Structure formats: C-alpha cells, structure tokens
Amino acid sequence: MSETSSEAGSLSDTASVRERSRLSFDLDVDICVVGAGLAGLTVALEAARLGASVAVLEGRHVGWNASGHQLGTVMPGYGLPIDELIERVGFEDARELWSLSKQGADYIRTNATEELMPGIGLSEGALEVSNVDVGDRLISRLQLLNEDFETEVEGWQVDRVRDQLKTGRYFHGVYYPGAFQLDGRKYVHGLAALARRAGARIFEDTPVVSIDPSGIRKRIVTPSARLRASHIVLAGNIHLGAPLRRLSETLLPIWRYAAVTAPLGERLAEAIVFQGSVADSDGVDHYRIVDGDRLMWASPETTWAARPQRFAAAIARRIHTIFPQLGEVQIADVFSGAVGQTVHGMPQIGQLRRGLWVASGFGRQGLNTSAMAGQLIAQSILRGDERWRLFSPFELVWAGGSIGRVAGHVVALWVRGSSATAGALARYRERARAKERIREARLVEANRRARTRPARPRPPPDPPSLERLPARVASESEQDEGRLHSNSQESEKVWPGPV
Ligand SMILES: Cc1cc2nc3c(=O)[nH]c(=O)nc-3n(C[C@H](O)[C@H](O)[C@H](O)COP(=O)(O)OP(=O)(O)OC[C@H]3O[C@@H](n4cnc5c(N)ncnc54)[C@H](O)[C@@H]3O)c2cc1C
Image (cartoon, rainbow, N blue to C red; front, side, top):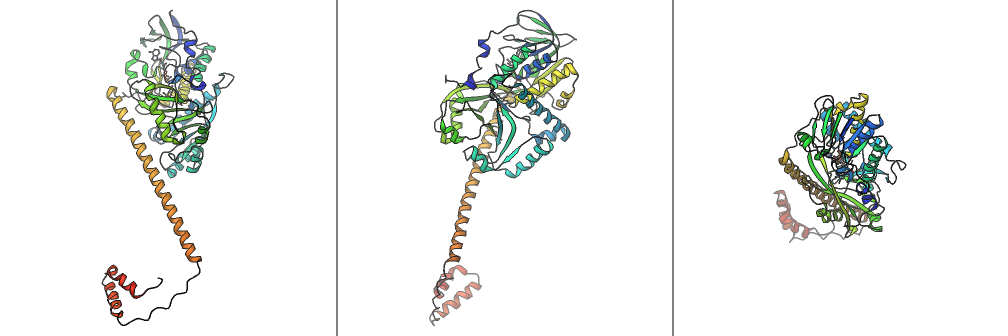
C-alpha cells in the first residue's frame, strides 16, 4: 500500500513540500475565488491573464479534493448524455453547449505542454466501451457526433475492441481520437503555478467562513483576515459549507475511489493493448495504463466519505473480473475524491446575483467542463461575454439532503446491478449465438459431405408380401386420421431403405 507510481504519486505531496501561504492580512482585490480546485484555478488564471487582481482562498491545499485525485482523461461533453441534452435545450443550444465543452478540452491541451508543465505525460485517445451488444444504436450516435456536433469519433466493432482489450466483457466501442489524458495531479499544480505566474495570489489553509455578497464591494471573512472584492466566484464544490449552504445542498456528493496497481510486467501488455483511457458506457469502470505497466483504475463509489484503503480489495477484484488473465493484482496506492453531482447532470455555471458567481457541479467529467467554466466566468466578468447564459436552463435544484444521498446510493447500486445483469445477459446471448453458429456450420458441412458422397446403389425394394399388406393399408388410413406417429414405425418396417 505504501508503494506509489511516479504518475500517480509524483505530485501528491507537492503542496506539503512547498511552503503554503495562509492569508493573515486584510486584502482588497477585483476577484476573490473560493476554492483551489480545477474550476477555481482556471478562473484565477484566466482573470489574471486578462489583467484583474485575483485572490484564491483555499481551505486546505491546492488540489486537495477531486481535482488532485482524478484520472486525467480529457474528453468533450458533459455528464448528461447528448440526446438528453438536445431534449432539454433544443438542437441549436445543445450544439453550442457541446462546442463549449470541446473548447474546454482544447484549453487544457494548450496549457498542458511539456514546456509549461514538465512531465505532464500527455497521451492520446479515449475509448468508451459497451457492456452490452448495442451496435445498431451506436450508429445514430456516431452520426450525430461526427456530422452535427463536429466531433471526431470512430465506431469500433466487437472484434476491434477485443483485439485492444482482451476481455469478453465488452462489445462495441466509441473511439475519440481527439481525447487525451495527462497526469491529473501535475495538471492541477501546473495550473496553480501558471495562475501565480500570471499574477494571481493563492492562499492555502484559508477557509472562507462567511461572505456578504450585497453591495458593490463584497466582503469575505476567513479565520485570520477579511477581504473585499467586486466579484466572488464560488468554486468550492461540495465542501463550500457555511458561506452558502443552500448552494452546497444542490449537489449530491459522490466519493469515487481509485487505485494504482504495482507493476504488472508483460502480462499487462498482453491483456491491454490500448494505450488511452477506457470507460464503460454504464460509468462503472474507468482506467488506463500508467508508467508503462501499471493500471490506474477507478470504480467504487459511495455517497459518504470513507477511507480509500477500504476499497483496495474491491478494486483488485474488479480488475480481476474484467481481466482474469492478469491473475492476482497487487494494489500500490488507493485514493479518492468527492465529485458534486447535480440533479440534472449539467454543471452549475453562472451569476447568482450581481458579482456573485458559481462554478461547480462538474461531476465525473470535470476537466474539460471546469476549464470551460473558468474561461466563461473570467471572460464574462472582464469582457462582458454572456455565453454562460446557455447554462441558465439548468437551475439550482436541491439535491435532497441526506435522503438524496441514500437515494443516490441506492440508484448507484441499482445502476451497477442492472449493468452487471445486462452484461451477463449480453454475454449469454453472445455465447448462445456462437453455439448456434457452430451448429449451423456443422450442419452445412454435413450437408455438403452428403451431397459430395457418391450415391450408394439402392437395394431393390422387397416385393410386398401378402402378410404385410394389411398393415400398410392400416398405416395409411391412420395417417389420414392424423395418427401419424403411432404407426410410423410400422410403415418403416413395411418400406425399409433410404428415405
Ligand atoms: C477518482 C476520480 C477520478 C476522476 N477522473 C476524472 C477524469 O479522468 N476526467 C475528468 O474530466 N474528471 C474526472 N474526475 C472529476 C473531476 O476530478 C472533478 O469534476 C473536478 O476535479 C471538480 O473540480 P472542482 O474545482 O469543482 O472541485 P474540487 O476539486 O473539489 O475543488 C474545490 C476546492 O474548494 C475548496 N473549498 C471548498 N469550500 C471552501 C471554503 N469555504 N473555503 C475555502 N476553500 C474551500 C476545497 O478545499 C477544494 O480544494 C474524477 C474524479 C474522481 C474523484
């Protein structure tokens, strides 16, 4: 458990190694950002680049929660499936929202260069695999993405998926060649470094305990200092707490647990050829190869905080279920983070009242969406960009408090259960189809042989004997009466020979 990989563990301690600066004096700024996760840091970077004075207040340290414990897969899109997005806001707005989500991914690609973030470890391509056989349904989705939403995607047949991922668990796949992955922890700390370089000031160990958003200059209170700012951006995800409890309560907190295995050597390359990220369409497993021969794998979820180590064995079992040929897998490191899930599945991006902004609820797909939110909010404050209004249809809806958490847990269990059942059924059908194909092939072969075999000369039929004649007549009359089977043996006896 103590062993860690270079990609997964390299930056986990960055904040503790670097001296953290806590805000201990009063300050006046243009923009105060609450929370130094992906969302808050992107707002800070963009606002500082546009010339604003920015202070980021972080209760713990940079990347303390989900932002510092993610798998680093960057894809276009949202938690809400594309067809539901169209249903919700109409085709044109859905297209614009989708295009914004792509811009978020592009923004990360621009920042995550080796020059700006050494060791960021960019690699290309992500694959979404289906647990069930739904090839026909995929076609319309591929068309929609390729043609209407200008997103490069490829549909992979079952054989191609299984050629890359040696497991019978998956059927078809959607490959996103433009998606990519990076070292998630390096990215969040790299973002903080860029924001600092652009002039933003980041204060850690500085929780915001209350805010007063009324008036032109808003007030922010921390345990050891007070701030005044023209704009406050709430990017605290599920931990925002006291400053705006009603806002926190619009998010269902979901803790997601992930692990990095010990080196798996050659057997990993034999089981997994694909080098990008893999996620199944039910959202149960998400994984990729890191450091050449380790697996980074996220799967279990809870709606309450638990010690990540508790899930080490569950993740090892999950890996074994999908790739049994890997044998026993040692877990080197386990980590977790809490994502904020909105009721409608879309992020919360916008202005709550004049000068009070929110950027949260990014769910499991937080890299591209938080990057987009950061840009939109900074550009709105400083350039009057109004595109954040595209998110207005997705209101702040109460997530149900503790009942919502229980319901969320039950729904997650149900999704996993039904995914497992649907997967088992699909594999059963596949086996049945394979057996049927073998049977048919055997039949075809047998018929072919029968046709090509030289015909045996027929023995001349026995002349009908007088004793047998009544029996045959009886058989025929019984056939007429529909009693075929009872006398068929009798009739065979009467007329032997090939049929
Ligand atoms: C295991 C796992 C794997 C994931 N993998 C991926 C992936 O591959 N791709 C992807 O796109 N997404 C992924 N995600 C989702 C992604 O990590 C999140 O959506 C994203 O990090 C959310 O960022 P955030 O800035 O909104 O929140 P957070 O990371 O939670 O940051 C909020 C910060 O605000 C601070 N804060 C809160 N309240 C206060 C306060 N009152 N005062 C001061 N500070 C405060 C917190 O301490 C915290 O540091 C994954 C998540 C997990 C858990």
